[in-house]
Length: 262
Image (cartoon, rainbow, N blue to C red; front, side):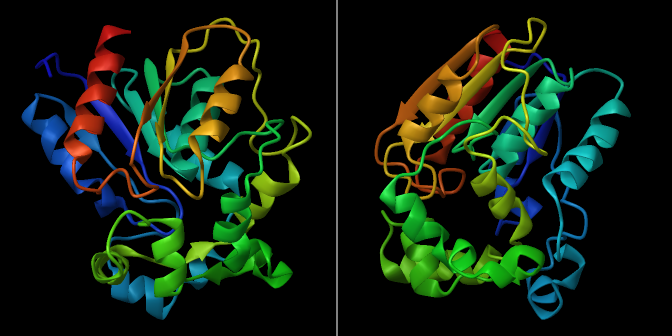
């Protein structure tokens, strides 16, 4: 990595607090960047408090979270590199579509609107939310077994349980329902102008062992774009916990090197 400097905004996804980016944040700061990792509205790094009372997240919409991050980015002195994980990857795409950022990296990204992709592993991983219609305006905390399948399937169950206990927070169900109901139509909060000509360069980083967002979904999402620089890189053996899984440094370094080169 170079010490080019500038600002990087890291956007977490569902079930994760901002501190899920701690390793990346420290690594990029050591490379000379100013790094901010804001929480979603109502989200803090106090995992215990979030579990006790996640009611602030009930009904939280993708558009609300995107607007929140847009205000943060627009207040910066210069356009940042935007990186997002999981639902944060979807938000990265939405923010680039709004003309924000100088480069974007979507890591294990949820698909944006109009991208019909639904593998069996997605169905199984999403059942704790999508199998229960009443979760649309509530939050869901994954059980250890569910977290292991969805997030840390290459870890031992003991390792997965430790990660879940340390950093998993309840997730609002609304964003997942929004993604599920807009797969066939490019509409709603995650609508994208896939033909936009002045979008910042975008990279999809996919985990080859990801159950929630298989690499095939990221490839299909990337192919939906009809203009601009849009690349895909798959990391074999990486799960949805790609941002903290052993060897995350390789992924972080690739993301930054790509962003710097574009």
